[in-house]
Length: 283
Image (tube, rainbow, N blue to C red; front, side, top):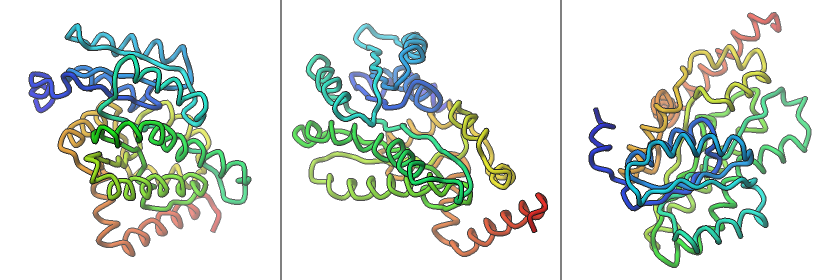
């Protein structure tokens, strides 16, 4: 019912969003909702064929001739290639109102199996993949004193868990970036939000699950699983309210508990880890 009311209100009419890493999963779902609520979108990802399919799906949500759906195939971690593409788009279509930074993926594994390159790859994708589009758009946002930056972290952006030692620091880094920008950009009327999605049924999660340690698989079972459209609706709702912390599903409960009772949360995490190791015959 809440979404039906929003569709009637068309809160994004005349607004434009750039969505980085939006060819599948949560990004695609958010782009669909943004367009359905009256806005226009530019979706950016690496795979051209997937982008084209996604753009066609989103196009079906258009209800006004003034709306548009555009796509750019580019690696968000490549500043030299991405910057001229975004700047050219801004010249032709104007400055966006929102930047959704959804780039990221996990490379799970045991700490002793990681190489230094694994840590660099995680940081490049999960941190620099969200920082670079920000650095490109910030001069425009600051000059016009407008804009809303939305970053995607994770429950593991405030809670460390075994099996993700290369991933967790990158998500903490995204939180730190959003916190610092929220403060520094207030005089420029630029808003910031940070999303902490729990496990969500996306192609990225399926790939991640293939490499998860057995302990991780067991420990993740209690966290529940959301669908991309559920996350999208929640993120859109909170973005419209200019919320800084956006925690869909169980992420809200976990974040509250970790903030108020950190020792208890760590105790449960350690207990689950011990139970998983026992079940696997490692104790």
